[in-house]
Length: 350
Image (cartoon, rainbow, N blue to C red; front, side, top):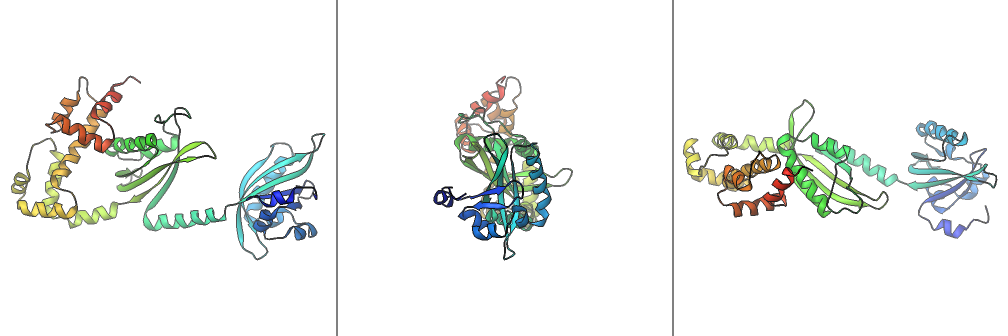
């Protein structure tokens, strides 16, 4: 052990240790390993302390099982996350990788254990879990599988991404999927509000935010983000909405293809045009913009699942957009591609 390049090993940011096969006692530990365990090397050697002695009681059985499999030759090594108890009774989380060191005839002589301190990560996970429960926040870290590692645009959904999309309301799914597709293609992020369905439970509104992060460790692209429950704020907003405005919006949702004006709608629902303008001005979006959003969503659906013989022009006119050039410009602003590109992709046999 004295011949080990101690200066080099002590400079590493992970714990390195050499462990006896027969007793499991620690014979060498670099500076980081000693810091993690809370013992100087001399004390570890003098008191014949083993890793199992320092392992948190609830983690010992799983650690022992892995160790016995390694001794029996059933596995070549193992990795696990477990807790260590320091002399001051504080607990440290470690990610451990254990591999055998063999002599010339192939027999195990030592074990090498590499320990990474992940206490901060575990604390953050616990805090985030608590915050999620309090704030209605859910987080995700999904692996995005590309058609090949060199692809800049092609993206195939993993099972976890498919599962997330399957939980989205059918009317909002295509829009979210498109937002994710654009984020993956450009290695950027997205923010979008959409509805999710909890099994047979009620529909909830969430604001989803995600960003693409490349992980050098597994050479994969991850979609990392969170979804904040917006159901209560939306419900409060709806409760604050005057009854004539609510009925007006319900009418617009159902009869989105009809040409209308604020004056006509105001007269139909017994409210002054001035009151309509004032309400929507305070909400941050005009009634005209809201009607355009609804029509654009229907246009998106028709372009994504086109009927035989459908054209961009016919869909634009059907959805109330009389100017095809203006429609194409607004569509691209919302969905990141032209209507022709959406229709061509949907019509492609691939």
